[in-house]
Length: 222
Image (cartoon, rainbow, N blue to C red; front, side, top):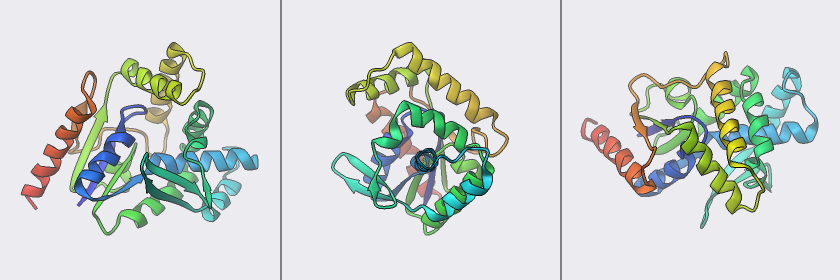
């Protein structure tokens, strides 16, 4: 099956999607990391989000791949491991701007469809069940309060040694929510038919069990 998992920034999509894929022995495609790679590459090459011609050319020539590892999954931009570089707060904000550009979304959506067309995949992002695979057999919308998502992001960045402020991190999450939900091309929405899972106050294992139950229901009707 194709399992589409959508939701706002910091909802735990990457961690839970990866674990769900491991439980099911499915491939995991982190679509958010793909947009982060484009943002990083554009920044390095000095390409403005308004320069659609150069953005299109950039998307056509970069190669993104995922490689499982003990820590979960490494992300490669061409031959470089950018797993850490794409996760900085600065690149997160750049990603929100770059990912709103239609030429970028169209290029990445096509790559995502190519990666997942054979099924047996878990994809997470902000438009998977609404745009990329609207007919996915399983559609989940994973969310949590902005305060909880900001705290999780803060803890994650602190664990990586980054000097960040909690209230600033929460404000960045809220800003990202507003940008993702209001963009004109493929905005963040709850896909039709998606099962909502609010992970506020829930452990990772509790959320994972809810996701597995949803998959089990879909399998029962196949």
